[in-house]
Length: 151
Image (cartoon, rainbow, N blue to C red; front, side, top):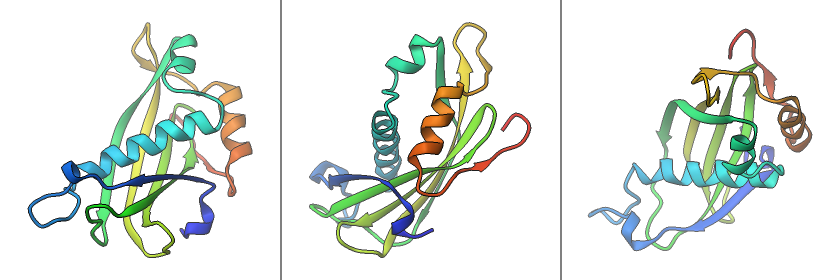
């Protein structure tokens, strides 16, 4: 994927508390950056999390997270955390995230997060609501792949 493939881009600055003894962002903080990106994504498509999900009696949970570290971000770097729904299944979706230094095109981190939509009463996977699916499809620059079966 390329920087241009992402409509959703969230800017943030690396804070002192996020760097380790080597002066680079501690690896675990990248998942926090990913979480912020996804929260802002839901807001951008008009489905603020968690309010809209809970109003439907649903929530979304991480099923899988993978992070590939390509280059280090450092204290005070301005970053752009770019995210998109890459695959939209019946009950799950894969959210791809790439992190860049602001103004640059060299990727620092690539992450893939798989989320499952869950009915809060039964604690079982449930289909994404049709209005949410349509908002995702309408927002993305490239249509998400459509998953098969439960995913």
